[in-house]
Picture 1 (cartoon, rainbow, N blue to C red):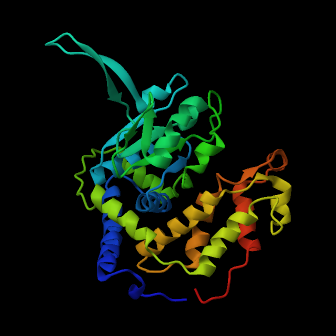
Picture 2 (tube, rainbow, N blue to C red; picture 1 turned 90 degrees about the vertical axis):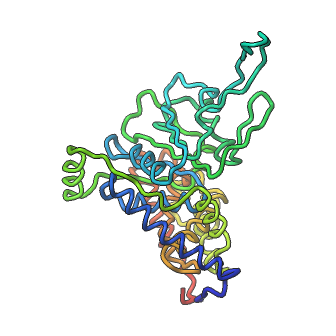
Length: 342
């Protein structure tokens, strides 16, 4: 099923899609002034922006996780706050709290709200698993509703709003597992690996010289909000949407369609949020590829980052060395792709 520009609401939508695609290329060009390689990671981060989601970036130290998000905020000229998660971090250290303020002229005291670092456009939750679940939960309302509630009062967060979190997969001492409710609010679980030899050589060469880049501002915060609305207007054929849903439903061990490996090794499958993010991410991927329709390949290409933190394995899988990524590979093989020419 091949759709055309006529499927968009107006020629303005087509022009905005062109602007979005051009903006993506310009953002990548600006990021390359500081970030070497990691193209797949950058692409997933940009899809997160264009959808309006949040993402978890997992990798060993020294792979520029923090630098990538901080540089992105500079390129987009958005307010950026980095929160270093530690065991003694309190929820109020993230959201803010009421404090007593004294008027110097009158001597009167009153309670005023002092906003926390969550009040930014891009928030980096650095090493998010180093703080207890109680503090991690301070992000839940912000990530889902883009607001926070303190002392019974609700404060809206400025748009656009994104949370990017980092996690070190090899250091477990002094860390806490992320609650499932927290994990499910992340659109992607992005794995960042060591780069190939030539890219790593370039990293060493560039970072051991003087770096003082000047960034152009190709995309504004208002542009991102417009892109997010545009993404939701991209048409999706019913077979493609059902394919995304079937992938998610088949990941659940109680599903009749689940392959034997899922029934054997999976404790809990993916939620409906996984299907929503598969479709939304596929819409953004299609637009940034210069297409006005979503293909099955768009869905398949995002299956791993969308599902790997939502398909929870059991003890048997851990003891036998079965990984979530290998189970997702089996899901992609087990769920047939409808034959509709897409």
